[in-house]
Length: 241
Ligand SMILES: Cc1cc2nc3c(=O)[nH]c(=O)nc-3n(C[C@H](O)[C@H](O)[C@H](O)COP(=O)(O)OP(=O)(O)OC[C@H]3O[C@@H](n4cnc5c(N)ncnc54)[C@H](O)[C@@H]3O)c2cc1C
Image 1 (tube, rainbow, N blue to C red):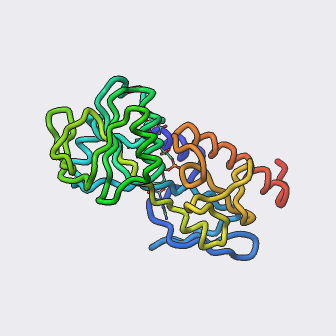
Image 2: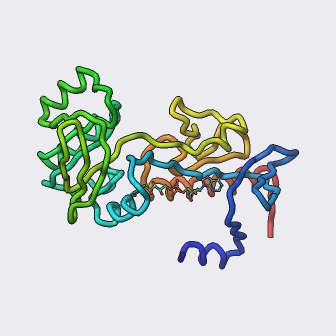
């Protein structure tokens, strides 16, 4: 809220709406939503990602997040689960890495397979070697037990102090890809050191870009992008007061 009023103070126009399309036009872009259309010389795409959630309703999801028994970012808050009984739900290499990361905070780490498929043998062996307990899926029927979150697994119902879903993310880079910007295999927008995408006049910052998904990182990238946008505009349209 404070950032919004700060932006308004400096003449920023804020539109609450979803951008459906960014189309190139001579000297810039047209940004269109349901009931708005804006001409812009530059576009900064900061549309973020959505973490895939385990199967639970919105109310339970919000409550569990607020209680800290459902968490998404061990890099952000791993310290807070030091010594706690923690589970990671997933089925890919990324989830196994998350378990390994959390082992540096607690000796009680359980890997629960999200579905019915098994984990690659080499990953399973490695996790066992570093003391991570492996439990088969599917991971379902989540429920709050006081401050803990419980779920049903192939080994029956189990509860944990904290559960980290590691089910991947939906990367909202569709506006960038529609413009032809380069993205990684996973769909993250590729940028140079100044947040420029491969399309002239289009910049990207935050989670939608490859790299660390954290607030401080997103804000730092936004700062870099703002400076690059200002300097690139200035080189095409110098303005002296
Ligand atoms: C549960 C949870 C806990 C977290 N905890 C921490 C933490 O403790 N510390 C930390 O540093 N980070 C944390 N993070 C990560 C942090 O939230 C992100 O790194 C940060 O918000 C990224 O900022 P962003 O602006 O790139 O994306 P976002 O904050 O996701 O913002 C993107 C915005 O773009 C909007 N959008 C998308 N598409 C369109 C469109 N077509 N038109 C208009 N708008 C659009 C979205 O609705 C959204 O509002 C956490 C994330 C989650 C999910």
